[in-house]
Image (cartoon, rainbow, N blue to C red; front, side, top):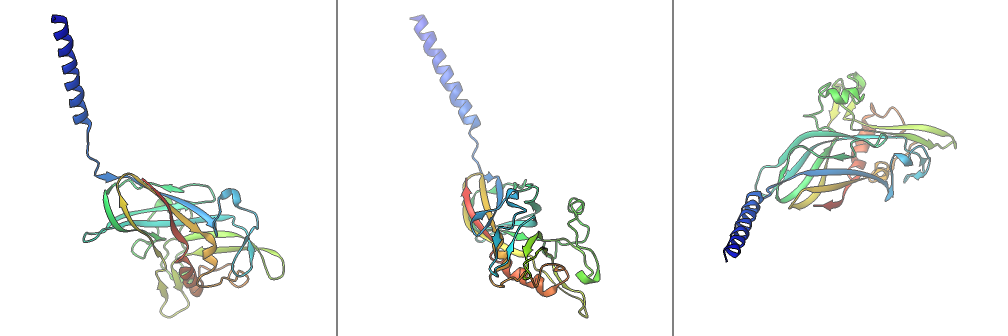
Length: 263
């Protein structure tokens, strides 16, 4: 009988101890980590660095082209809530498809769980952030825009570098450099500049746990909708071409979209 009571007491103590451990370890989750995975396609055909250096894509104008370099910048990831201030992450990420770096980005700041009316980011830098020589890591990547009259005498940074080869109207293989920056007309008096960064809206989302967003770039859209891009006309020296930069901004409105969301 004494042995029975001893066993019962031990069992009761063990159960109580386990229960206390469970209560101690039970922490209500109130914030989530966010991750953004950047993927790339040409009208739903996957594009990676392994796809580079081969003339295999056809733009809306009928130009056959390759992709040999693709880098672009995203910044200011923003979470919008009904009746509350936006949560703006003052960060940036240089996505380098060529070298397969920064294709996945996880901001350090955690986001409160809840309903959000929109999740968005800025493609490029807006004028507030597009400050000459402000970011040493981007300078080391040769991402700056030269501070010269042709580019508005204000420096700043690239939004995107997209390069490759195409078959021109003479049936010859030649290069193109589709470089996107803040639009500037350095020949105007006074010099005219225009913020051509783009707010990319991913839409409403309810965050219940750590979350991963797939952000898709359809590279074909840079050459169409609304402007049908003719590489024979605009293939190089585009950074100082005010009209070309405005056209890039028009076409860029439809480049990004939300893919799968996991949490």
